[in-house]
Image (cartoon, rainbow, N blue to C red; front, side, top):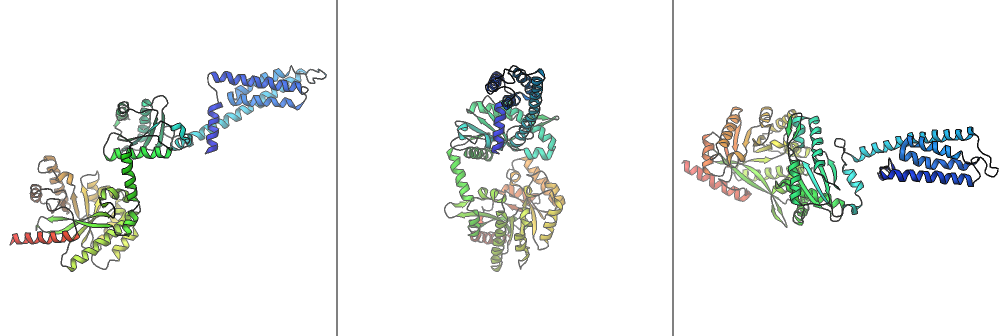
Length: 546
């Protein structure tokens, strides 16, 4: 890498000089030629070996001006040597054949050098392009940034902006690779348009660009963002870039600059900001989050997680006989930590398998305890499909010596994949043990109906975004009504999430829904409180029937 960097710097400095540098290059070459002529004369004439020193200025000539430079300066050097005697002491002059032969040799050798050096330099430029440039946009990549800005003094006082195209994969899936590449080229062109003098542009990852700026003001930067968010037309398809943007100022190291810009970008994305400028407050939040996430493996090992239960009321009987299992991390220093903080991170690592295995075991243990107390309760666990293929998890389920009819796995749409055959096989295998499956957050994705059509689900959970306002919003009401009708036609039980009030509860009952889950009954409760609440609730319902 260092050798490549050295040769590239050498190319940029000497290869094909521009404007006034041409004059100085020519002047230097002539000075060297006349210097060599002087050395030849002082050492006795052209019959001695010092004539070969003439190749030094000729090599410089071909390096600066290629083979044409070798042809030109080789001819001049050969002609000028004709004025140097063959032997200075005898003042014996050269024959025309002698200096013409030497001129021809100078021209031949220097021209050959020119072709060789041209080839080498062009190869080095190709290496530079392959190593330090993005293939699609021809913009400097992450290696380019790391290599050419390794010296932190070049970053002093600069601002780095990271632009991440959030709908990159969506464009790829919907329109294909060729449309995506053209879109990326056009987006990079827009980035170049908003760039000013002394601004460096980089293409860090497929969907991430970096802009190194000398100065930053919110007003001028927002104008640039407006330009970048305009639609891009590719083959008469209008595509709007969905961007998350973070800005950071250089403080101490290049690595820290990149990290801070990425923290600001992630914060902007999470909070739906147009962009965000890095500051110490979000840095403290980020460091705290990292510190907590680093403790996850130990938290699983030390049983720091606590089960909470959110009941589902059955419309037919009015009783609570099933519940969703929720997780709370009881941190020894931070107290209760919401799963929103750690679950997205855990789902991206192998920890999710260990955690899911622990969750299944803990749920089955408490289910056994309740059954001994004659308190049967079906428990639904939110589980990624990938975990159900993990041997650690499957062995726990297969080796469980009792019926698993009281266990249900709720699968999020976003966790499903297009390989229906593989998912179907996993689900069917687990259903043999009595486990049931529910499609969670129905209506929030794009492929829900195809999932219901191709996979053996038993229940359908309507997402709370539709049920919350269905008693005041006609569109939400119609969506819920249609979803219930669809589920019924496919032989599925229907669960409605986000039921906040009795009005919504009554509407769902009229629409022939099977279960209601929400704060209208109670908030999620820990095991002891949940058991007590359900017993009192069910006794009250039974008493009212009598």
